[in-house]
Length: 141
Image (cartoon, rainbow, N blue to C red; front, side, top):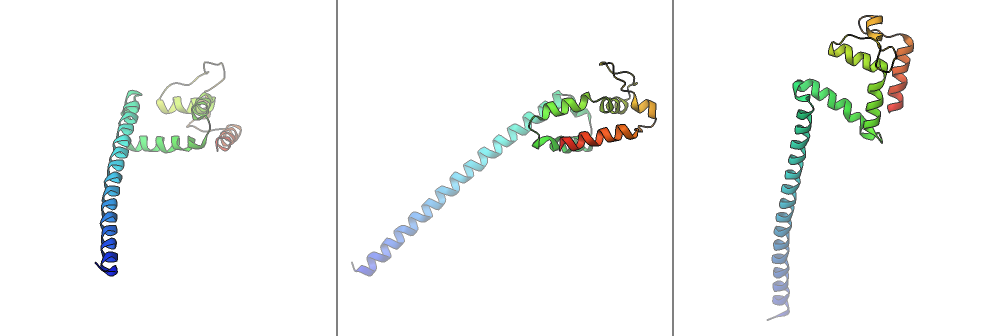
């Protein structure tokens, strides 16, 4: 066998090995993608179950979409649960939440007056209340 033939044979063996390696790589990547998809689908199912168990399934999709978009703003906050809990304890937010749900408003359980919506009429806020809400939103960012 000549030097040229040996070189051609070696090149062919390397091409065959490369093709085999490419096939093995593509198969391994396909398995990885399937595992990732399965894991993602399981997580989505669990999240949907959590939302359903929390009673969120009663809302229409546009409402849920808006709420999730607002909730997504908490991604950069170190302790999103504490921030949301504190926000919901705010008398102004509590009054708005109660008004939106159709509850009658009055003094909140902690003794503070949470009846801003009913006092101001049609959900209006005083300038002090508006400033308070702007400060809270700025702090949340």
